[in-house]
Image 1 (tube, helix red, strand yellow):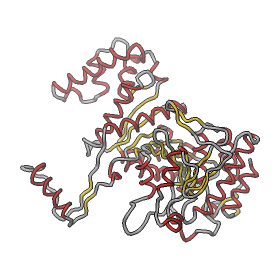
Image 2: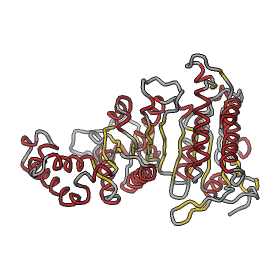
Image 3: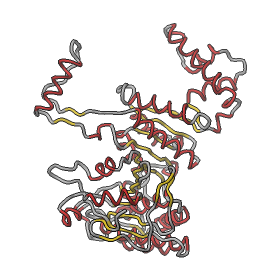
Image 4: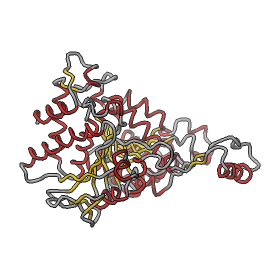
Length: 466
């Protein structure tokens, strides 16, 4: 490993985090790279770092400490190195394994489409993890935000974010449209209009299964009881629909002893409610209107019921399935209302890329907004924790912005490296500070009797509340 990146020496009193046999090995003084971020990121990072250091010191009495190492991306990198994302910054994030960043500007005028997307693709950070959790005292537009406690696992590398697009009017786009119309769609009624821009939406078995695998492991590690596959498979059958099918395959083939699917739970529950129930009767209960289906459809349902009872009747029957993780699926548009009217029914959501983008922000709106919404991008051996909001340049260097998103992303990072005591200390201090109505302007204007403070003051009060 190099001793310098971007011309800066690594801290001599720290050690890198290692990755061995599928596990992160964390020293007591890990070197963790940080990108302060653009715009308001500068104020937010200064406040957040003080909070992190104070919590680690208080939790471990000096036995542990983070050795911070700055790396560069965005505007600061461009000013120093004439590039938005220096190779050395990527190398440091790769070599040192775990890093954290503030919000970054997306460059205007071509080049990198998004620095965040670039980092995810370069390091193959395939799971975007977004917890949506309510902290008491935070103003919310819904009646019962305390019922919301969801972790979203969003696939991070495929779907429309893969960047395979062709601009309308270009020779490449015309060639693709011609191929689709004259070859793939030849003889059919479907045609792509000649004046279209075209994007390609790849969703693979590999990408889907490793994301769902990550979500189920996350549920097992944290004691969560449901994993919901979110998709638009009723319309996009071979991409979104396949995401659903491949997700169920992961659950039933790789986590058979720990999971039960929703339909399996119905079949097993029907037998427990009415011993002696025939296969045909059971099938009719899980598929109302079965008698109107074709003979082939009825036979397929009978085979499904018999297959479930034969394969997991002994291991999951007699109520044992109730202690398993329930894996179900929901249509993407339905989940938007479900997390509002029945949030307590959902715990882990596994989503394709675009759906996860929408749902993450919609969920965050219920519990305080993006200002306190944390995020992480996880791969095999690498992790980047990040603010989920933008740079808000008009507020830059004014010490007014809510630092909650980066602070709670740091909580995720501390949990990830196993420093849970420090993580809980930060969460408790933040919640207490908000309950004291000692808040930044975004919350102050929504809370009667609140005291408006700046970014640095909020951090100072949090540290005091530890």
